[in-house]
Amino acid sequence: MITFEDIRHNEHINIYIKKADEALAALGYTEHAFAHVTKCAVTASRILLELGYDERQAQLAQIAGYMHDIGNIVNRVDHAQSGAVMAFRLLDNMQMDPAEIATVISAIGNHDESTGFPGSPVAAALILADKSDVRRSRVRNTEIATFDIHDRVNYAVKKSALSLSADQKVITLEIEIDPQICAVMNYFEIFLGRMVLCRRAAEFLKLRFSLVINGSKLL
Image (cartoon, rainbow, N blue to C red; front, side):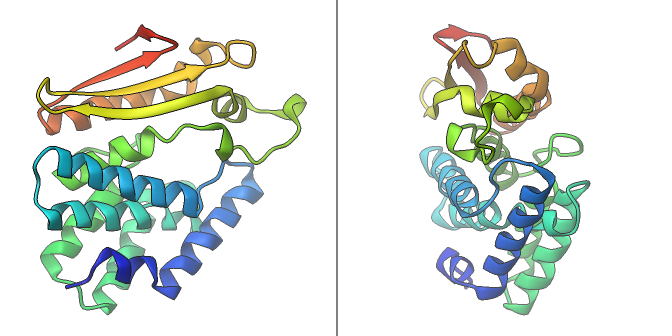
């Protein structure tokens, strides 16, 4: 059985994560390296465990979370699908169970808001984990005067937390934004599609998705 530790310590996978992030850095994107993918892995696993899914499902969500952005080494466009194909070869070479490979690559291939759909618990958990990772430390640009809208929105986030209330069947993304840096409307300008996908992912898990920004419930 291939474990998350096997994935996390795999030299080839880590090279692809590093190189994919370098490619995005050259394009001016926010951080997509080990901090992001590790956070996604941990959050995706936690969601499924808190909902009562078994340990293996949670570990598959960890694996998908860790590998989900490797396709950016090919191109940012359609990176979810490229990453799924890359993950298939990597996991197949590691002799992972075919049914588990199918679960992981389906989740990776469906995590982007432009084409994604939560077709499994693992995919739904990955979507929620990925799209909720909004934080100042992801901004690479040190010149505030040259921020684009993605830099500005991420830099404005003073605090973000994704919490699950299994008994109330609701998962909440709570964000605190500095309005001197970014208006709440700017958040929706770039993240509306992501929030819609989060709502679909929550619904797949029989949950309601709630978004709270600066203490105001918006969804």
